Image 1: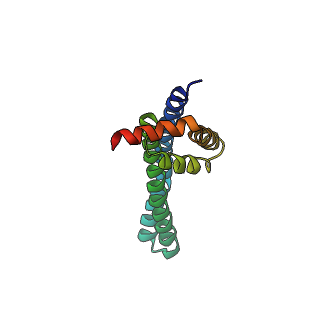
Image 2 (image 1 turned 45 degrees about the vertical axis):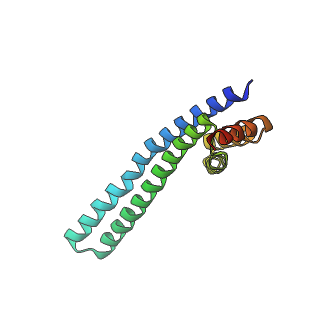
Image 3 (image 1 turned 90 degrees about the vertical axis):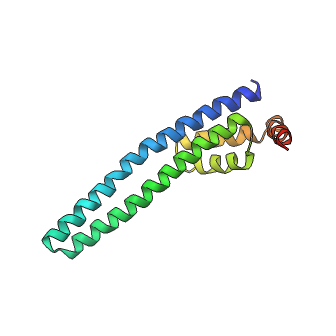
Length: 133
């Protein structure tokens, strides 16, 4: 199979992976809502422990949400860069980060790394970079 076709296919998978990440970020918002309710209930009843637990849930929920959204957007950006044959190092880093998310991310990351490391694909990225200069 021609490297251009492989990169286009992997690019599409990165778009899908990024979309799944953005969708999954909505489920992280459950912690934000749960923490907010716990905080309000603790404030109403005067229970400091419940209020503190709610605050912790809220803070970690917001942090988790932002991290998952950022990874989703960066994965979509990686798909765009793969399609344009540019920013090879960024795509490599995103592929390595995808490997952490077993099993789908691992498969996507490994295939992306294997494809980007082929000499003919490296040449595609280098030629595209030379055109921009």
